[in-house]
Length: 114
Image (cartoon, one colour):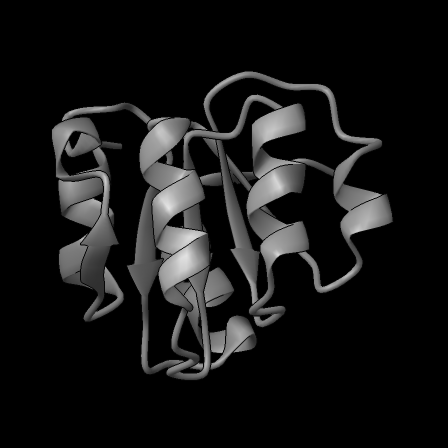
């Protein structure tokens, strides 16, 4: 599924990385524990998190994750946006809970990691 389709489904707002809207996502991983994210080794992964700090962007960078969705209407900082732009990471903010976003994406055909 294309990132631009995901944005529509989850009522998302793109904060950074509009150049990646045609990127294809096959799987999603939802976590606020970045140590858990670091254990996931798969391509075309979307990260869902409510952890709004620089570690979330750094973890995405280290894990080669090109798209991060921040749930629960969490707002990212300017520093997070700057680092995401440097690493070509798309940041999306969604007003929905992590549970709701996960369900929407699962029903739309995005596969879970586990």
